[in-house]
Length: 295
Image (cartoon, rainbow, N blue to C red; front, side, top):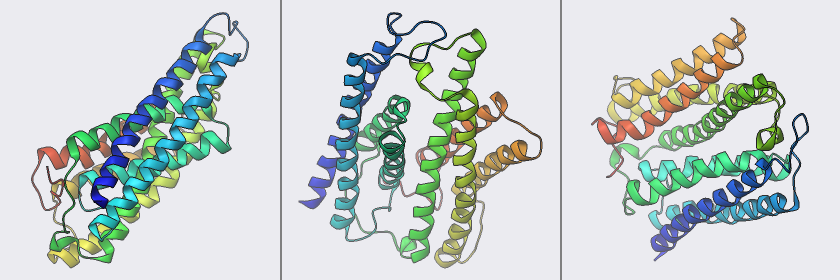
């Protein structure tokens, strides 16, 4: 019964994220109207656009509550930490991203983040409940380790930060393109400057990288406990290292070579794509010791 409530909460969150995305899209469309913004002006937020923004925020809050409830109830139903398969990892990682984004929108006033983050959450939760879902089941023997829990929690938080950094990098490319064309107008004018978006992406990824490094190290300790070796070039291990190398290159290029702007943004986007290939593509396409997708 508890598992059913968890599934219901997860499905509800996916649907409500989609509704929130639609509300934010309507806000974007209302701000885009030429009557709302003149060239060279800050984006004028009409009462109609503001109303759609408030609706989007309210729906996102409800969706996040359903999302968190679904994760918690999943753990209660399984009588273990809810990180035993791809469905549980994806929903947990997206949950961390949703909480952080909600804080930025609500407390920092970053309403411009609403549309891209709800798009990510609607698609991610939608795939989780329709494609990745598996019934509650006991953990396989290899996962019975405290290091597994530490490894997964670190990976989920780092993954949430990778996603937010990637979103900021994508928005940076749109914003800098608009700035290069002339006065920024419409929805893009509500965003911070391209330089601020670039800096935010860097700060988030700078936070995520050491956490990802710890994820790999904790995973090595867990692997030694589970399989008697720290590293075996399993596909998941290999692509975790590839992800680490991409973000290490990103940080190295920014700090030592002075890479900023477009080149750094594309590296950040490549990094988040590699991250999702590691945690979704590898589970679906390759068989290895980490094949816990269950689908």
